Length: 531
Image (cartoon, helix red, strand yellow):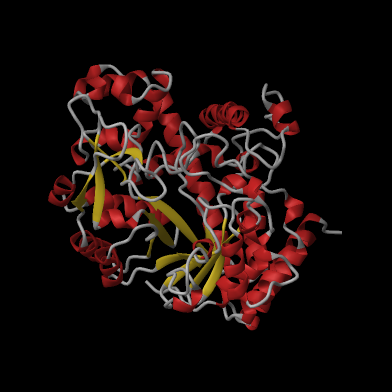
């Protein structure tokens, strides 16, 4: 997959500003697209969009296909007629939402608040929806019938069992006894349909945002974790595709072996795929998963790409990753079938960490771009594979990712060695007056890599307190947000100028995009003020 020479910004929608305690798909998302247009960026990368559970990690979702209802915009629900203006003001959490610090998502407050609004929207739909509204909703449910009914039933039962993992439900439901499933569908029909309705709303709101981005020549990049959460509709509804025992507990779980950074490795806990069963079904589950995400985005980064070539298999009852062993993945056969079913595969391979020649061969066999991280480039000598002078074109270069510190936080970390800092400064030749973050942004944009992606925190020059995730921890992650005034004109102009200088966008295209946006704003202003 070759996208041409362009650049973009990494920002998860939860980080958008807005009055409801968490970023959503409403007006601020459209203003962010405008910022991308004005700053010469042609791509917006998001993290996984699925509904999150404990820890709020988008990489541990209840579904590999569903959208996160927390991202639904109350303002757009007002426009659609499913909420009354100001209907949130009598909810108990609203005072805390109003007074909450804009720079963080307070999930404990936000979750009951947002779901209180979504319950109201469902009741309103039941009361007000026209026959054509119901027909559109039913058509959506029919189009998504290969995953939506199982997901909606799973979520309804999760609420019935007060959040317990599905392996602790009634044994007949754990084993998916047909009579038990039908009884649950009948008994909890309203809750199931409500879950489907929220997915319908998500598809509408995300679809409108995607259309707006495309209208302004902005592409969307999604993120696909290779593994799914054990407590998910995917595992519950497709037990035969995973290594599970009779009670649904994983026999083998994912992770990585011991290394220089961890004597016991990492035990992630995701159940491993039964690749033989998947292959026997023509990888149908994976193909449906890929089709679903490619309806949402234009291209997708697959996390832990090396797991397709070989993966670390840890016994399910092991406490650490030490007892694991390498097993072969599906390799080229999997990607050949994907290409046969889907055509050109718009996939970016997350090929970070300890990578073997076999993994690189698999990546290159299908022309998949790999990843380069500048924060990894300066801890060793000139043969470091993350240094830009060694890049080829078919790569994606980042200053850092959601799992790294910000550039400013990294450079000024008290534990950062003077040698590593000096190595960076020697490589740059000189340090610019605009801050170390702009030096690394320049390094990324000027590289030969086709695609350069910058986390918004680095564009803003923010420190370590603005990083998105600390791998290996479960608290205080996925919560960073910015405020509207932080998207300053200076950032727009500096990023646009640098993107033009290094051929990420032509000056003619930049001017045309800005002019189109200005005309649209003028037209909207004239409509709102006809006098």
